[in-house]
Length: 247
Ligand SMILES: NC(=O)c1ccc[n+]([C@@H]2O[C@H](COP(=O)([O-])OP(=O)(O)OC[C@H]3O[C@@H](n4cnc5c(N)ncnc54)[C@H](OP(=O)(O)O)[C@@H]3O)[C@@H](O)[C@H]2O)c1
Image: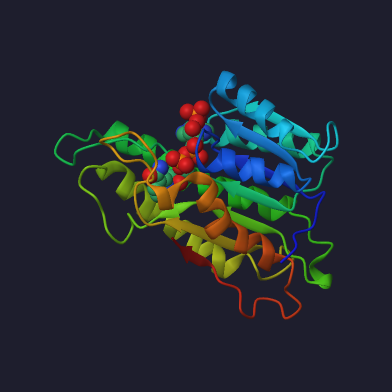
């Protein structure tokens, strides 16, 4: 199924894996892209790579902004700035930020858990509320809906003791997403929620290589792409929309 060109997305939480592949793919389709994460140097180099994925030079807009998604003021300020850079319209907001690192329930400090809750759950909440006020809804009548895409996994259902803090934080953030999925399509906002859920670790901890089925570009095509295809084909509104897709 074809995906329209010349749409706008902001991706929050940008690194070398899924978010980078998502941005590269959308750039190749002619989308304008704003990237947000904390590290200016890695953001700048990913933005440069993404720029080269465009169908032709200088045909799309790629901007980036360093911000901490766990800090509501920092996140909101960055989202406002990105929206302005993209010309004031936004079709898709991807919330991808998480701290993926090991932690043990017997040694986890309240501060560390609070940090993860901030990045995962509070960031998802703040970004979703912000998007409600800024999503482009003009084309909903033609069957094209704005999309709030929140990357997740299965730690909420199958908590893993080796990533205790992330498991707890993801349970909270995925509940935020599921409640948004019930509320955001209603009223004036008319926003779809999509939850691409990756069911395992993408990288083999022994070899440091990606597991073949979880290579980031494969994940984007198999798991993310259907949300982008389906959001444009909503002649019957929410009917048939799938909130959660798992790979
Ligand atoms: N990797 C896996 O095995 C796996 C499995 C299942 C689900 N997931 C989920 O998939 C998503 C993407 O994971 P990924 O491994 O593919 O990573 P990724 O897309 O390559 O990058 C995620 C980026 O988020 C940024 N980030 C972290 N904390 C942030 C904060 N407070 N504010 C702003 N940005 C922040 C980090 O960049 P900075 O450090 O520069 O801020 C990081 O590089 C996550 O939500 C993760 O939970 C991952």
